Length: 101
Length: 101
Length: 101
Length: 101
Image (tube, rainbow over all chains, first blue to last red; front, side, top):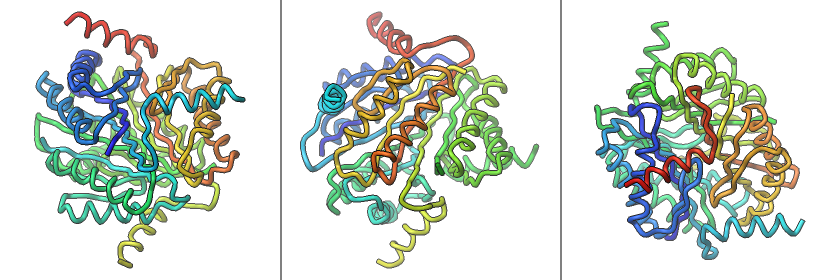
């Protein structure tokens, strides 16, 4: 099962800046070799379900290991069986519609 | 790693009513034996990370098997290392604060 | 436009416990007079769109006024035009399906 | 109150493809004049709270007007009082940390 997800990991109890923890999660994501794209409120990741979910778990482990006592994560998960779809396809198909108007 | 999650599975391409698919997910959750509590916009589930995530995956598999070609899920995941916490504790501690005012 | 929402307000930079801020949001919600129901990972609220959104904004204002320098909120918003639906209806229809199996 | 949000509008009861509705939301967002950036699982938008929230409401209205009987939206909302922050700042600060390792 292929999944396109949007991951937003929020550490609590580490102060107001969370960029160090977000950067550590980016490294976890990069090391996974999965397709991904960071935006201002999370990161899109796609790949086989178990591999994507291993990344999410690893992010929690790494951020706790950095000293964050608490984490709250928001995750969106998209799967489909009618056809193959990748992250770029989603953006491209919307942009094509916008151009045709 | 213990996790408290909030799971909201939304099937697309099955029409406007999604209660059959939500009920199927409830059965998956019940069969897992994990603590859970359904509300009007999702279900709280808690337990060991891998068991909770197996439930989320199983929900996607079951809803696709029912004929939904596409699913979009929203998942919140809370973990903490400073102390043990359960779903009831979270509600109870807020209610205690409200009573003391 | 009637909306059923699920609101989860997370203050950052206030330490690991956020129950005081969550309790303050509960008071905002109660004072609104809107139907609501707290669970372990948020609060369901329903009512007219503008009233519900005024509650969400007021929660951010109150939590900042308590000293939280940063807030990240997750909000799910459900609207429908085919028929009237309330929070209880959603849970009831799923439970009816589960009983009939 | 300045807000950075992530908006993901999902129409139900319109079939498996939702790109027409997503494109319509993009037009609403563009017409608002607010800073925004679409990704594969939503759109980041930033600006004054009331203007951003007017966009979210308008998206629901427009998508219902296109014939969608039901919508479920996921919205993340970030506000902070300690300093001004824009969407680009969030990505830039994480990327700077990643380069310095």
